[in-house]
Image (tube, rainbow, N blue to C red; front, side, top):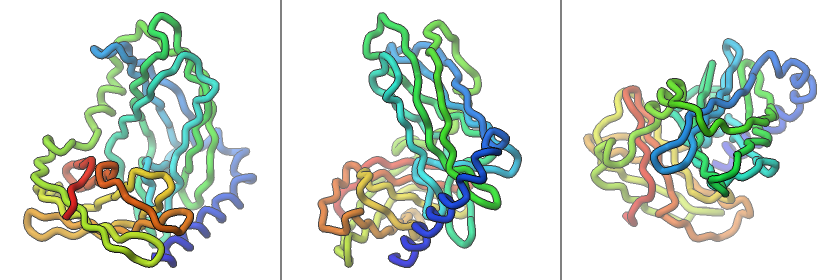
Length: 269
């Protein structure tokens, strides 16, 4: 596990080293625009960030795997924004230099549900997104956005399609139980989740997210025996010290050939 973490750190260093030469051609690799989807029944507004990638390039999911670069968002310069909820479409699993990464190729439409701080005032979405884009090499990209939300926009088919591609929740996925057993290891915890759910088809990859940005999760080991899927990962705090894990914050996403299922929280097991 420590070796895998060291490999990931080395990969990030290599990414940084290529950034300067790659930035000049970044506009030929990836572009971003904002789609408006109008008001929801809850009084919030739907929008989407659309990333368009050149042929052969990909970008990453919120949990990108050991070989990926996690996306970060900075909206501090926006106006009249309250809460924002990102609704990630089901990603793909890639093998990259002997390591696993998770993300999207060609295009990502990322729906965002936005609550205005003041419903009577316009909303300005202004900020930057930092992502990784990869083909033969990986490079970091900083993309700028300055967009006024169209409050009168109608339903957008591209946003609707992206929403339909989200993973199933517990009920939709037929999850019966989800338990997590925690075992102390050197520098952290070993988590083993046992999930009772029907097969999602073909090779199944589970991703465990600890629910705490200060905790690093290793690539999950996934196996199935009948109706039980087992997923195990090592969880290491960035300060390499003891910590308490909130099981209710743990999110487990099972990615299969036919569908994906997302489980929020797990009981002691």
